[in-house]
Length: 408
Image 1: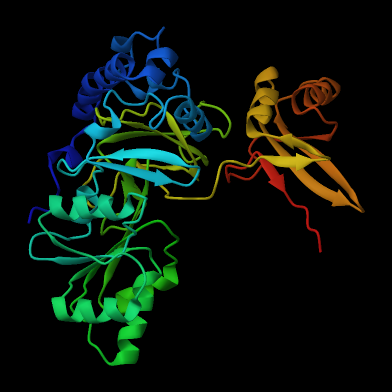
Image 2 (image 1 turned 60 degrees about the horizontal axis):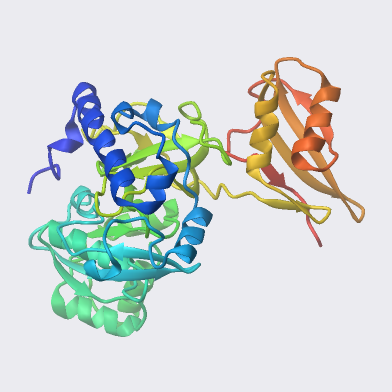
């Protein structure tokens, strides 16, 4: 098996930029021409001019709430695809409900690239413990396993003792599922005196892979790597054996933006993950995941050359209620935008006695504190104490609203 899934993974910067200048305008044009939603949202956009991430950053962000509203108006997919529901091989439902299409064409969700990076391929038997019920996770990993030539045991979730016996009887060599369920299977196997020592690879997602759990698997001789993806987007980023951040998949473009905006942050700064897919069947342009991450400098030591991110670092939706009123990240972004002297803002919620207290910390290069306080009232619709701090002094954790209240 080749060390790499294909030659896209090792492109140099010039070729990557050349390819992007061709594929991105084509996807924008496809979305405009073949979907109702993007036909409306991007009607003033000249697709031919959107040839890089810099131009992409000028387009509007699509949020999950926008998708839900669109699907409510035009079920099931909200005018997001040029194909009818019965032209897809699968239709899935995620909480919301949100409906996602699925196809059986080769590696439609691009999970094969991740499984290849895990060292899973022809000759392996993969016990796929992701759910096959309503949501697409099970099918996502099954299509990836098929793309790398592996055999799939579609185990799904639950019935742990049966999972153990099947793994032993079938000679399972790789696991796919949530990070913690593999431990449950292995512990049950130990309890039953059944040897599952042929399992040497684990491809995990949809949960936190704690270092202690990874180390426990490593002690058993199992290489456990994780990916980051969603039901809407498929695979977004994945680990390789280097285990130094997550490498962005070749079928998507990732931006990290200030929560509540579409404005890209600087390299290393934590922000919201915004993804554009290059999937012609289901184009998503600047789709805000609601997750936080950060861009890592340089390239992976494994030889894959695409941008890397830190992986999942929390949720970007920090909407918080003060005194019965919601304050949203979009409002904080408007506050910053009103004053060029303000570099960054952080709204902090605390309690004094039985009262909510709002403190607004502003990284500022000068300016009028009284004017800032007035803008706080206008944008957040509440009065708060304004505290000016030096640029660079607020934490780099992606938070623009920090709720420190306790109710003990």
